[in-house]
Length: 129
Length: 417
Image (cartoon, rainbow over all chains, first blue to last red; front, top):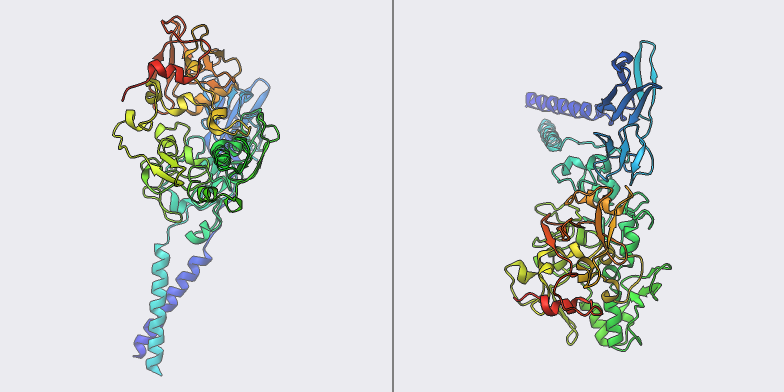
């Protein structure tokens, strides 16, 4: 009887410990990523237009320098799609030219320019907020 | 003592095993952070199998909580649903402003054509002011047919009619027993009303009454899940959804009772209108929304006293008259409403420079346009089907130019059933 009691209590203790670890191991959802390391700046040669899907952005290398446009539609937040002559929102039909300037609504703002910088090791760092 | 200890340890073990078993059956939380809100929500833990409600409202952008309310972090169904707006239907007019409103959504300005909610709240379909005025006039409660009361009080200072406000219709304050009975039995087909039971009347309330077609289905009672789940919004409305209110039967003023249609239509020709109605071929080959405009159906911001006042589409709107071709307009503005509507319901490929038909009030009939040979084409908004039709001008029609109402066209062009 003693053996049975000890075995039962041991099992209970192990189960309880497991449950406790399970609950203590709970992690909140990580904050959405807002900083993206896009690799060496050399990956973006002059004249290039490079989509960065993980950041919902496109990096442009124009004569005036590097810039980045957010692909999040300024109307209601859908992800705009690259077309032949610009970008189009698949949700509500807003259209933008290749430089992100508004062609037609319902959006009332151009596509948002994103802040970026070059890290000391020559990587392009993009900030989406 | 030892026996008690053993018993207690076994009970503890059983309870812990049950707790582990229950925990193991719990669905793994499925997080979603919509781009529009940036706030994590766990609704997809249970609702991942729901279809996308529409291409304009992708869940990755809107999430669920923005429209439905609810407790976004809760994993317990009762807690998660405890603060839902409008139960299963956030578009109910009692909560629609919180669910669907917003300057960029459906309560924007008249200028940017986003005043959907304001217009609907003043529309006859929502106020029921026409029927109420007719009944109150018929039973001596008011001296004329001018609308004074609606399902709810509403103000429309910019109304283009003589009516700028409605008070709430309260049957309990009516002296006529007939009006009291009317209030008790006959208020079933305005946008805030629950419809009678039966698949022929199946619709939700609010925006979903029209934009979530249910005809032929049996929506689950409040608080119970539908099977299959109905999660859809569309502007391609089939006539059958209009029929859940219109053409479904008649209210008899003698006994103040709704009498359903007694015919049992088996095809569209017979289903479209009640047997007493007269109509033309295009009226049963097209959908209601192919002719009737958004302002007719959803209101234009004015308060009307009858459907006759608010409806203005005529045969001549698309067919013209003996002397005039139908009105047209060439699209020059990339923000033209016609382009927006054609984008949302792409049954027609429209672009700047195209010419489309317009109504007498200038509303775009964006799904119809002239062809080089002098005919016109129209694409069904719900079916995508292409129809080609001719103008009256240049035909042998003997129509009196002063008689343009539809009944005069029906005299020669009505369909025999």
